[in-house]
Length: 258
Image (cartoon, rainbow, N blue to C red):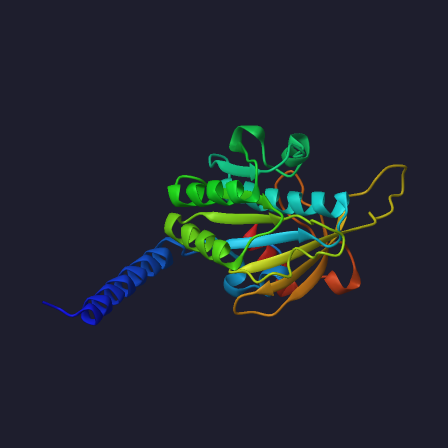
């Protein structure tokens, strides 16, 4: 009869084998990346795009409605591009302030979207995890105010297991409480800030501009860009600024990505 210490060691060994099997399955399901289609951004990302079976976070640059709305549209455009014309996106939210017409303007149409109204951050995280493990969704989006490292690890593992894109909107709780200060297992973390639109030669409002910041990425360096908000095809654009004028090689990459 094995001693208690031997039995414990056998259980630990069995758990390690199970974890390795889960990780191997996650790698198998998670192959592939979602490129932005802009060489200036894609070449700064590991894998030349967002890892598909992984967790990615985004927050407004400041605690204002405009920046938070921009962050929501950024995630909506990513989810819409992943869904294409037939995939389904699950959006778990804690309050009823998601504006469906704005989501449709960046390509996330109502027929591609399922809403899950949740009463707390814990409920949002539980719905996200269940949706990610299901494996039949194109993307899962969740809105939270505060989440611990252990919970993001669970979401990352669920995304790997289900081969599903996980997108998290980190909402501001207080003006001085940056939602991206807590550690996270997310593969990338983004900030969005609104900028003035370009002036038009005729009366009207130009395409919205954002200050897009890649605050952190696993295995890569942070970066930032000035971009124009997504269009109806869910794609960002670079304004005609001197620093954003692409080289001939960049233009060739963007045409191939499109």
